[in-house]
Image (cartoon, rainbow, N blue to C red; front, top):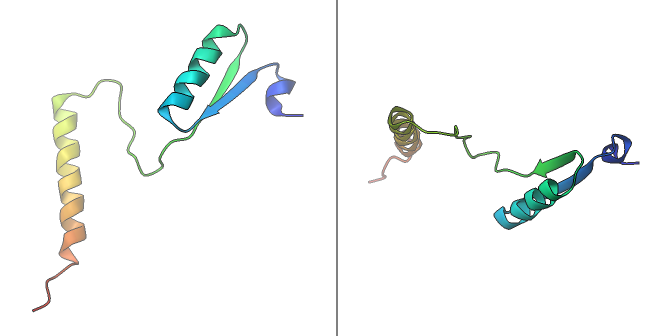
Length: 78
Protein backbone atom coordinates (compact mmCIF):
# COMPACT_ATOMS: atom_id res chain seq x y z
CA UNK A 1 0.00 0.00 0.00
CA UNK A 2 1.50 3.41 -0.96
CA UNK A 3 2.46 5.68 1.92
CA UNK A 4 0.00 8.34 0.73
CA UNK A 5 -2.89 5.92 1.22
CA UNK A 6 -1.77 5.12 4.77
CA UNK A 7 -2.06 8.79 5.76
CA UNK A 8 -5.20 9.47 3.69
CA UNK A 9 -3.46 11.86 1.32
CA UNK A 10 -3.47 12.25 -2.42
CA UNK A 11 -0.31 12.47 -4.45
CA UNK A 12 0.71 14.03 -7.74
CA UNK A 13 3.96 14.55 -9.56
CA UNK A 14 5.32 16.68 -12.32
CA UNK A 15 8.53 17.35 -14.19
CA UNK A 16 7.26 20.00 -16.60
CA UNK A 17 5.60 23.34 -16.00
CA UNK A 18 2.29 22.08 -17.46
CA UNK A 19 2.33 18.91 -15.35
CA UNK A 20 3.04 20.93 -12.21
CA UNK A 21 0.29 23.42 -13.05
CA UNK A 22 -2.19 20.56 -13.47
CA UNK A 23 -1.05 18.92 -10.23
CA UNK A 24 -1.38 22.19 -8.29
CA UNK A 25 -4.89 22.85 -9.65
CA UNK A 26 -5.89 19.32 -8.66
CA UNK A 27 -4.32 19.75 -5.21
CA UNK A 28 -6.32 22.92 -4.52
CA UNK A 29 -9.58 21.36 -5.73
CA UNK A 30 -9.58 18.39 -3.38
CA UNK A 31 -10.17 18.93 0.30
CA UNK A 32 -7.53 16.75 1.86
CA UNK A 33 -3.72 16.64 2.16
CA UNK A 34 -1.74 16.38 -1.06
CA UNK A 35 1.88 15.38 -1.50
CA UNK A 36 3.48 16.91 -4.59
CA UNK A 37 6.52 15.18 -6.02
CA UNK A 38 8.23 17.83 -8.13
CA UNK A 39 11.20 16.80 -10.24
CA UNK A 40 13.83 19.52 -10.50
CA UNK A 41 17.17 19.91 -12.24
CA UNK A 42 19.84 19.04 -9.64
CA UNK A 43 22.33 21.27 -11.45
CA UNK A 44 20.10 24.35 -11.28
CA UNK A 45 20.79 26.70 -8.38
CA UNK A 46 17.77 27.38 -6.15
CA UNK A 47 16.58 30.98 -6.27
CA UNK A 48 15.01 32.94 -3.41
CA UNK A 49 11.47 34.28 -3.79
CA UNK A 50 12.70 37.85 -4.29
CA UNK A 51 16.12 38.45 -5.79
CA UNK A 52 17.82 41.70 -4.83
CA UNK A 53 20.16 43.53 -7.19
CA UNK A 54 23.10 42.62 -4.96
CA UNK A 55 22.22 38.92 -5.07
CA UNK A 56 21.85 38.99 -8.86
CA UNK A 57 25.18 40.82 -9.24
CA UNK A 58 27.03 38.41 -6.97
CA UNK A 59 25.48 35.40 -8.73
CA UNK A 60 26.54 36.80 -12.12
CA UNK A 61 30.09 37.29 -10.79
CA UNK A 62 30.08 33.71 -9.52
CA UNK A 63 28.98 32.40 -12.94
CA UNK A 64 31.66 34.43 -14.72
CA UNK A 65 34.36 33.13 -12.35
CA UNK A 66 33.13 29.57 -12.86
CA UNK A 67 33.15 30.04 -16.64
CA UNK A 68 36.64 31.57 -16.51
CA UNK A 69 38.02 28.69 -14.42
CA UNK A 70 36.63 26.16 -16.90
CA UNK A 71 38.31 28.03 -19.79
CA UNK A 72 41.70 28.21 -18.05
CA UNK A 73 42.22 24.51 -18.69
CA UNK A 74 41.55 24.96 -22.39
CA UNK A 75 44.90 26.50 -23.26
CA UNK A 76 45.34 27.11 -26.99
CA UNK A 77 47.75 24.87 -28.80
CA UNK A 78 50.09 26.61 -31.17
